[in-house]
Length: 251
Image 1 (cartoon, rainbow, N blue to C red):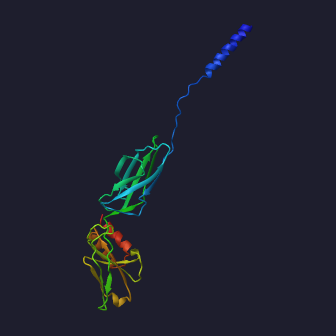
Image 2: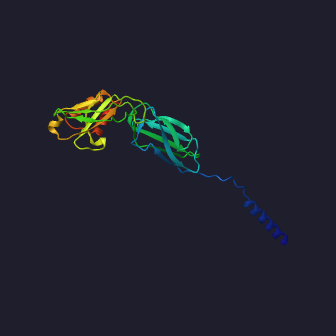
Image 3: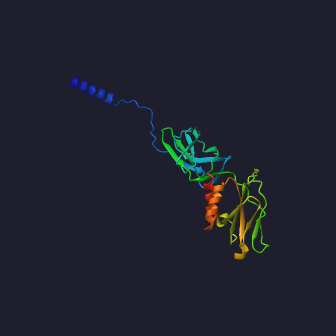
Protein backbone atom coordinates (compact mmCIF):
# COMPACT_ATOMS: atom_id res chain seq x y z
CA UNK A 1 0.00 0.00 0.00
CA UNK A 2 2.80 2.36 0.80
CA UNK A 3 4.53 1.56 -2.48
CA UNK A 4 1.32 2.29 -4.44
CA UNK A 5 0.79 5.65 -2.70
CA UNK A 6 4.35 6.70 -3.42
CA UNK A 7 3.92 5.81 -7.09
CA UNK A 8 0.69 7.81 -7.36
CA UNK A 9 2.23 10.88 -5.76
CA UNK A 10 5.21 10.66 -8.09
CA UNK A 11 2.91 10.40 -11.13
CA UNK A 12 0.86 13.40 -9.98
CA UNK A 13 4.02 15.46 -9.47
CA UNK A 14 5.26 14.71 -12.95
CA UNK A 15 1.87 15.61 -14.42
CA UNK A 16 1.77 18.97 -12.64
CA UNK A 17 5.30 19.72 -13.69
CA UNK A 18 4.47 18.99 -17.32
CA UNK A 19 1.36 21.20 -17.25
CA UNK A 20 3.25 24.07 -15.66
CA UNK A 21 6.10 24.17 -18.18
CA UNK A 22 5.94 27.17 -20.68
CA UNK A 23 8.03 28.88 -23.38
CA UNK A 24 7.24 32.60 -23.81
CA UNK A 25 7.36 34.36 -27.22
CA UNK A 26 8.91 37.78 -27.74
CA UNK A 27 6.74 40.74 -26.66
CA UNK A 28 4.42 41.87 -29.48
CA UNK A 29 2.88 45.37 -29.37
CA UNK A 30 -0.24 46.06 -31.40
CA UNK A 31 -0.58 49.80 -32.31
CA UNK A 32 -3.98 50.93 -33.58
CA UNK A 33 -3.60 54.63 -32.72
CA UNK A 34 -3.63 57.13 -35.60
CA UNK A 35 -0.62 59.51 -35.51
CA UNK A 36 -1.23 63.07 -34.36
CA UNK A 37 -0.85 65.48 -37.30
CA UNK A 38 -1.20 69.26 -37.65
CA UNK A 39 -0.50 71.28 -40.81
CA UNK A 40 1.13 74.55 -39.72
CA UNK A 41 1.79 76.20 -43.11
CA UNK A 42 -0.11 77.19 -45.13
CA UNK A 43 -2.82 78.14 -42.64
CA UNK A 44 -5.24 79.68 -45.15
CA UNK A 45 -5.62 83.17 -46.55
CA UNK A 46 -1.98 83.60 -47.61
CA UNK A 47 -0.83 84.80 -51.02
CA UNK A 48 1.91 82.53 -52.40
CA UNK A 49 3.59 83.62 -55.60
CA UNK A 50 4.28 81.85 -58.88
CA UNK A 51 8.00 81.22 -59.41
CA UNK A 52 8.71 81.45 -55.68
CA UNK A 53 9.24 78.73 -53.07
CA UNK A 54 7.45 78.35 -49.74
CA UNK A 55 7.76 75.90 -46.88
CA UNK A 56 4.95 73.45 -46.24
CA UNK A 57 5.27 72.64 -42.53
CA UNK A 58 3.56 70.24 -40.15
CA UNK A 59 3.81 68.78 -36.65
CA UNK A 60 3.40 65.05 -36.05
CA UNK A 61 3.83 62.61 -33.20
CA UNK A 62 3.45 58.86 -32.68
CA UNK A 63 5.38 56.18 -30.82
CA UNK A 64 5.97 54.23 -34.06
CA UNK A 65 6.25 56.89 -36.79
CA UNK A 66 7.48 55.82 -40.20
CA UNK A 67 10.20 58.31 -41.08
CA UNK A 68 9.66 58.01 -44.86
CA UNK A 69 5.89 58.13 -44.94
CA UNK A 70 5.07 61.72 -45.91
CA UNK A 71 2.84 62.27 -48.94
CA UNK A 72 2.02 65.82 -50.07
CA UNK A 73 -0.56 67.03 -52.60
CA UNK A 74 -1.93 70.37 -53.75
CA UNK A 75 -5.27 71.44 -55.19
CA UNK A 76 -6.15 74.52 -57.23
CA UNK A 77 -9.92 74.09 -56.98
CA UNK A 78 -10.68 73.89 -53.26
CA UNK A 79 -9.93 70.17 -53.00
CA UNK A 80 -11.97 68.83 -55.92
CA UNK A 81 -8.77 67.56 -57.59
CA UNK A 82 -5.34 66.83 -56.12
CA UNK A 83 -1.88 66.79 -57.69
CA UNK A 84 1.09 65.00 -56.12
CA UNK A 85 3.88 67.20 -54.74
CA UNK A 86 6.02 64.41 -53.26
CA UNK A 87 5.62 60.74 -52.25
CA UNK A 88 7.34 58.78 -49.46
CA UNK A 89 9.33 61.78 -48.30
CA UNK A 90 11.15 62.09 -45.00
CA UNK A 91 9.02 63.12 -42.05
CA UNK A 92 11.10 66.07 -40.87
CA UNK A 93 8.24 68.54 -40.51
CA UNK A 94 9.04 70.72 -43.52
CA UNK A 95 9.14 70.57 -47.32
CA UNK A 96 10.30 73.31 -49.73
CA UNK A 97 7.63 73.61 -52.42
CA UNK A 98 8.12 75.20 -55.84
CA UNK A 99 4.87 77.12 -56.33
CA UNK A 100 3.01 75.99 -59.50
CA UNK A 101 2.55 78.35 -62.43
CA UNK A 102 -1.26 78.47 -62.32
CA UNK A 103 -3.16 81.19 -60.47
CA UNK A 104 -5.82 80.19 -57.96
CA UNK A 105 -7.89 81.81 -55.24
CA UNK A 106 -8.81 78.43 -53.72
CA UNK A 107 -5.54 76.51 -53.49
CA UNK A 108 -5.04 73.91 -50.76
CA UNK A 109 -2.24 71.66 -49.53
CA UNK A 110 -2.75 68.17 -48.09
CA UNK A 111 -0.32 66.08 -46.03
CA UNK A 112 -0.45 62.41 -45.02
CA UNK A 113 1.78 60.46 -42.62
CA UNK A 114 1.81 56.83 -41.42
CA UNK A 115 3.30 54.77 -38.65
CA UNK A 116 4.98 51.34 -38.97
CA UNK A 117 1.67 49.59 -38.23
CA UNK A 118 -0.08 51.24 -41.17
CA UNK A 119 -2.10 53.76 -39.17
CA UNK A 120 -2.52 56.85 -41.36
CA UNK A 121 -3.31 60.49 -40.61
CA UNK A 122 -4.44 62.92 -43.33
CA UNK A 123 -5.18 66.64 -43.14
CA UNK A 124 -5.49 69.57 -45.53
CA UNK A 125 -5.11 73.34 -45.24
CA UNK A 126 -7.79 75.98 -45.61
CA UNK A 127 -7.80 77.77 -48.97
CA UNK A 128 -5.04 80.22 -49.88
CA UNK A 129 -4.07 82.16 -53.00
CA UNK A 130 -1.52 81.52 -55.72
CA UNK A 131 -0.79 84.49 -57.96
CA UNK A 132 1.93 86.41 -59.72
CA UNK A 133 4.26 88.56 -57.64
CA UNK A 134 2.45 91.89 -57.21
CA UNK A 135 4.01 95.17 -58.27
CA UNK A 136 4.92 97.62 -55.54
CA UNK A 137 2.53 100.32 -54.31
CA UNK A 138 2.78 103.50 -56.42
CA UNK A 139 4.31 106.53 -54.69
CA UNK A 140 3.64 110.24 -55.02
CA UNK A 141 -0.12 110.14 -55.53
CA UNK A 142 -1.56 113.66 -56.03
CA UNK A 143 -4.88 115.12 -57.15
CA UNK A 144 -5.14 118.33 -59.19
CA UNK A 145 -8.52 120.10 -59.09
CA UNK A 146 -7.34 123.39 -60.54
CA UNK A 147 -9.93 123.40 -63.33
CA UNK A 148 -12.70 123.45 -60.72
CA UNK A 149 -14.51 120.48 -62.23
CA UNK A 150 -12.33 117.37 -62.46
CA UNK A 151 -9.72 115.72 -60.29
CA UNK A 152 -6.61 114.67 -62.19
CA UNK A 153 -4.89 111.94 -60.13
CA UNK A 154 -1.19 111.40 -60.82
CA UNK A 155 1.53 109.13 -59.36
CA UNK A 156 5.07 107.90 -59.88
CA UNK A 157 5.63 104.87 -62.16
CA UNK A 158 6.32 101.52 -60.50
CA UNK A 159 9.41 99.60 -61.62
CA UNK A 160 10.18 97.41 -58.57
CA UNK A 161 8.19 94.95 -56.51
CA UNK A 162 8.17 95.00 -52.73
CA UNK A 163 10.79 92.21 -52.92
CA UNK A 164 13.22 94.26 -55.00
CA UNK A 165 12.70 92.22 -58.18
CA UNK A 166 12.37 94.33 -61.35
CA UNK A 167 8.85 94.16 -62.74
CA UNK A 168 6.73 96.53 -64.79
CA UNK A 169 2.98 96.53 -64.04
CA UNK A 170 0.44 96.06 -66.82
CA UNK A 171 -1.42 99.11 -65.58
CA UNK A 172 -2.86 100.90 -62.58
CA UNK A 173 -6.19 100.79 -60.76
CA UNK A 174 -7.57 103.93 -59.10
CA UNK A 175 -9.72 103.63 -55.96
CA UNK A 176 -11.73 106.33 -54.20
CA UNK A 177 -13.68 107.12 -51.05
CA UNK A 178 -15.01 110.22 -49.34
CA UNK A 179 -13.22 109.25 -46.09
CA UNK A 180 -9.46 108.82 -45.60
CA UNK A 181 -9.48 105.13 -44.68
CA UNK A 182 -6.12 103.38 -44.37
CA UNK A 183 -7.01 100.02 -45.88
CA UNK A 184 -7.72 99.40 -49.58
CA UNK A 185 -10.69 97.24 -48.64
CA UNK A 186 -12.71 100.36 -47.73
CA UNK A 187 -12.20 102.01 -51.11
CA UNK A 188 -14.31 101.71 -54.26
CA UNK A 189 -13.15 100.85 -57.76
CA UNK A 190 -12.97 103.95 -59.97
CA UNK A 191 -11.11 102.86 -63.10
CA UNK A 192 -7.83 101.76 -64.59
CA UNK A 193 -5.07 103.55 -66.43
CA UNK A 194 -2.16 102.47 -68.64
CA UNK A 195 -0.30 105.69 -67.84
CA UNK A 196 0.54 107.41 -64.53
CA UNK A 197 -2.58 109.58 -64.37
CA UNK A 198 -6.36 109.26 -64.31
CA UNK A 199 -9.11 111.91 -64.52
CA UNK A 200 -12.09 111.65 -62.19
CA UNK A 201 -14.61 113.61 -64.22
CA UNK A 202 -16.92 116.21 -62.67
CA UNK A 203 -16.13 115.11 -59.13
CA UNK A 204 -15.68 118.60 -57.64
CA UNK A 205 -19.19 119.59 -58.74
CA UNK A 206 -20.76 116.97 -56.48
CA UNK A 207 -18.24 116.25 -53.73
CA UNK A 208 -16.48 118.60 -51.34
CA UNK A 209 -13.70 116.09 -50.66
CA UNK A 210 -12.42 112.83 -52.08
CA UNK A 211 -9.54 110.49 -51.24
CA UNK A 212 -7.72 108.28 -53.72
CA UNK A 213 -5.48 105.24 -53.66
CA UNK A 214 -3.64 103.73 -56.62
CA UNK A 215 -2.85 100.03 -57.10
CA UNK A 216 -0.40 98.66 -59.67
CA UNK A 217 -1.60 95.39 -61.20
CA UNK A 218 -0.20 92.47 -63.17
CA UNK A 219 -1.92 89.73 -65.19
CA UNK A 220 -5.53 90.86 -64.90
CA UNK A 221 -7.29 90.13 -68.18
CA UNK A 222 -9.35 92.59 -70.19
CA UNK A 223 -12.58 90.63 -69.74
CA UNK A 224 -12.39 91.24 -66.01
CA UNK A 225 -12.25 94.98 -66.51
CA UNK A 226 -15.11 94.74 -69.02
CA UNK A 227 -17.21 93.05 -66.32
CA UNK A 228 -16.28 95.77 -63.85
CA UNK A 229 -17.24 98.55 -66.24
CA UNK A 230 -20.68 96.99 -66.71
CA UNK A 231 -21.27 96.52 -62.99
CA UNK A 232 -20.02 99.93 -61.91
CA UNK A 233 -22.48 101.64 -64.23
CA UNK A 234 -25.30 100.64 -61.88
CA UNK A 235 -23.59 100.43 -58.46
CA UNK A 236 -20.41 101.12 -56.56
CA UNK A 237 -18.06 98.18 -56.06
CA UNK A 238 -15.67 97.87 -53.15
CA UNK A 239 -12.13 97.00 -54.18
CA UNK A 240 -12.45 93.61 -52.42
CA UNK A 241 -15.42 92.76 -54.67
CA UNK A 242 -13.76 94.16 -57.79
CA UNK A 243 -10.60 92.15 -57.11
CA UNK A 244 -12.58 88.89 -56.98
CA UNK A 245 -13.99 89.64 -60.42
CA UNK A 246 -10.53 90.37 -61.81
CA UNK A 247 -9.01 87.26 -60.24
CA UNK A 248 -11.86 85.12 -61.51
CA UNK A 249 -11.27 86.34 -65.04
CA UNK A 250 -7.55 85.53 -64.74
CA UNK A 251 -7.93 81.79 -64.24
